[in-house]
Image 1 (cartoon, one colour):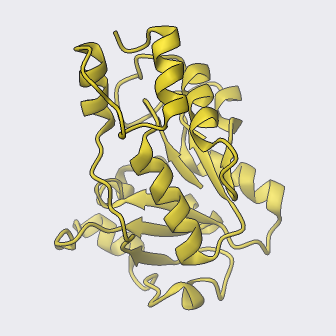
Image 2 (tube, helix red, strand yellow; image 1 turned 180 degrees about the horizontal axis):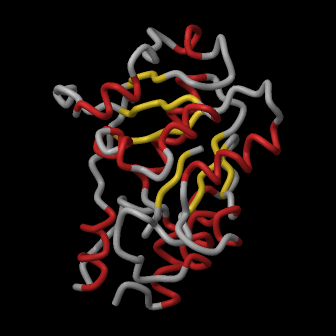
Length: 207
């Protein structure tokens, strides 16, 4: 599970999903747009438009799935509920992974029922070089004893572990910066897939 607002989806998101799949030899990566993000202000475009951009961006990329399961739920898009839905789909023995960036990981203890996340899935933290500081006390207690040295160790059980992973490309593209560029009429070429840029232009989004 690779969740986010995808407001809009950009090449950094998509390349990270591809590299995550390769690094962990995953069958597929479910990219799940949040319907009502619980940890940030509401996006400026609809969930359906963000899903359409995600579908356009993924295109025929093997192993990536635009997953609309959060769009049909009312209320905030809590990760535990999404993981529970995936667990029902794949069964108790499937090895599920939730990918998060380091910034999100450092606030994991503040999430809604964070213990449930580990009951349902492993957490793979996409590290940035030089950002492995001391964990907040509540987070350190939550993840104590969960660290896995590598993917092989992580996948010895269906859920409950933490793996820190550095991806090769680490494309520093900001969705906030993209929205600003689009609002100001500046170029976003080579930051978004062409199909996503075309969708934004045709709908006059972010203006």
